Length: 170
Image (tube, rainbow, N blue to C red):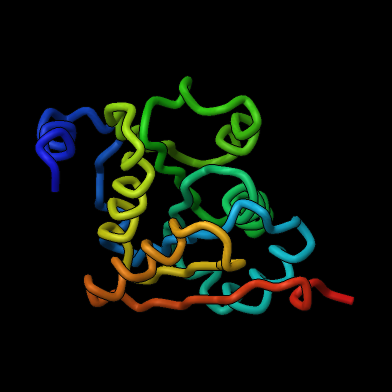
């Protein structure tokens, strides 16, 4: 951990850090590619996440486009507790995701310095809070794969789900 990351956490800059609901119920992190369409994502969630619903879990997402926004929508329809973890402050998030973030139960604002590594740190933070990690990956970008690798190193239950156009329901 870099010094600024440790300072950010030790200074209490995260807005919500109450781990109690997470510790009691077993939380699940959902990570994934930004280029997954809504229909494909919903199909994958029904296939891979349905068995974990209605067990009092807390679901953690990053709050970006693609898998994150579709997970927020789908989990809301299932009346599940969904939290978003953002690397900066809520008001610093792009307007394109503000609507999705308004739908979650809680937003954890890490208020990290603006660095290229802030997203990776946010993903590791989510993994560290979770018992189960799902990664839905199209093969583009590296954030999802890095998140899954971190989860494996932390000995979490990990589910890597490759996503292709063939995953869309016909």
